[in-house]
Length: 226
Image 1 (cartoon, one colour):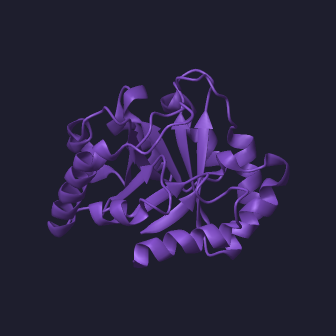
Image 2: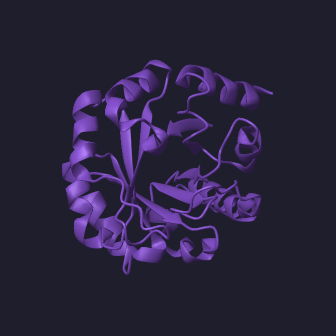
């Protein structure tokens, strides 16, 4: 299982240094959480394309950057994030009216397309266009609501996606990646890896004041090995 950091817990005054610390620790995928102050429940505003462009310019082309759009108008603004240099746009199925059209637009623009769904949204809502997605992100917390614990009840949904993706790939279709985000720490990393997750987004479990990124990543890796 691969680990990608969410930068929301980072000190933005030294973001470039933090990202370079992550790369030095062996991270090669950065997850950018974009909130517009409207769609998420706590009305948080995070950042937009300008900061993403600065991250791309700082890190170069060797690092994968995705943007997780927790916004109301992804269908109208996705191109701004593509222009900022992301490799993948991940949008919420709950906030997009025509997801197949968005996937087509993203692929035509030369970037990967991801779909994210909230804990209470069924996997069946995504299955009709799963074969066209490069990634599915299952939220294991409610986006934008602070102080939440990991929600183990998403296990059945994760396993349903894992089975569908494996069947799709075995039939010669796309090997869609499966990601999880929310409350991932070293104590539950092995469990979600066993569920079949390919990529885990880790925020405070990776970027915190209790250890370096390398130390925290080593703890997660050790938990996986155990």
